[in-house]
Every structure is written in structure tokens, then in C-alpha cells.
Image (tube, rainbow, N blue to C red):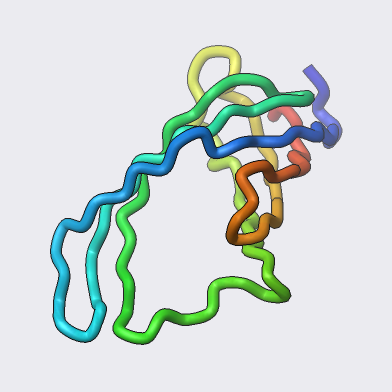
Length: 111
């Protein structure tokens, strides 16, 4: 397993987004739970399930810059199990609000 940083390129498609309100308030504020399923292709293949707990303010902020949502994340040290226990790295991606397919890069290495 490489100890120097490697880059993997992949895409994911949101195959389902099931969002339900937990509580709704006046002026449009609400708390919701969403269960999102993604399918990955490219250097990384598989499926994942992600669950969000989301708060909507009365006047929603603009979460997109130039029509694109951007995310950066870090793989938390020692969060993996088995063969992934020593995996380290980070990724970033951008997608438009209506995009169901988004490309991303992962920089990773093994500690």
C-alpha cells in the first residue's frame, strides 16, 4: 500500500434522496432527516448510504457559489476498520443543485 499520496478519480450518482420533516415551524423553519443513497464509479466503486439531519432557517441562505455546491472533507485517522484502518486522505467535489452525477478526486495514502 502506498505511503506517499495517490490520487483516485471517481463519480457518484445520487440514486435516492428520501427527506422527511421532523418538525416544521412558522416562517418556513424546519428540521428534517434525509437518507441518501449514492452509487460510485471510476477508481472507487460501490454504494453508500448517508444520513443528514438538516435545519432550514426562515430565509434560506444561498448554499451555491456560481450554481455549484462545493465540499471538502478529510478521512478521519483510525476511523476505518480492517484493510482500511490505516487509510488517510481527503477529497473535494462540486456539483450543481440539479446534478445527479458529480465527479470528485480523492488524495489518499496509508499510514
